Amino acid sequence: MDSIYPKLKVSTSYQKNTQTGTKVDRTYSMAVHIRAVQEELPAGLEKILGILEDSIKSQPMKAPAAIEA
Image (cartoon, rainbow, N blue to C red; front, top):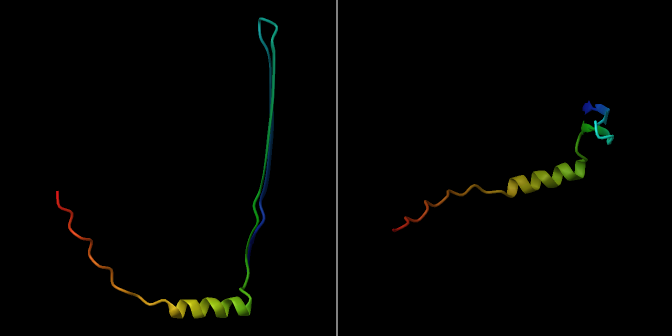
């Protein structure tokens, strides 16, 4: 069983006063959550997928028709 549970939080801010008296204030934040789990399939689903896989039949592809100009 594989499990990945990383978390990331980032915050930053920016402040600036211009010569004309304008105040610039910016705040940014970001949160990333990743959860990845690999567990076994339930028996019923595994059986259904097996039936579907067995029902797939390979067929050769036909060559594309020539295009006349």
